Length: 136
View 1: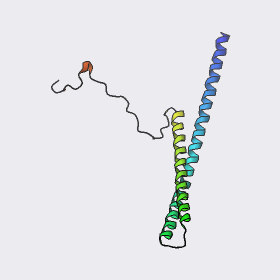
View 2: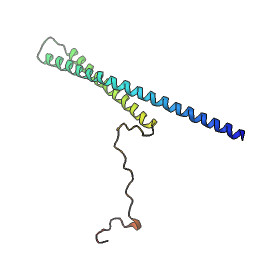
View 3: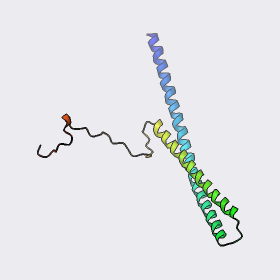
View 4: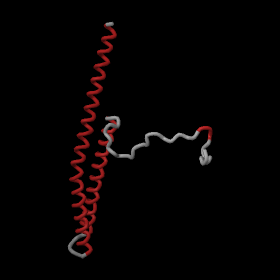
């Protein structure tokens, strides 16, 4: 009887520790998502600023103002780096949302994919697939 009680206590301790670990993992994923969501606003502004700089520099170059080709290329590279940073932040946000979905066993739905249909249609019995159903 005492051995069964000690096994029960150990099982309860394991369940409690597992629950606490899941909570910590969910909180970590939520914080990562929150941080990525905050960064997205800044990266969007960075894209807009980079695109404006590249466009202005390109226009000045084509208007034969005192702009060198290296400056045009540098502005284009900066704009591309801003887009790359934005894509990286989107990726981190999606990973955090997918982690939240996994940790909560689907209780939290991030909406990253279309839901799977509840049940697939069952085929007709006795190989009657393809036979017309009119008049039955």
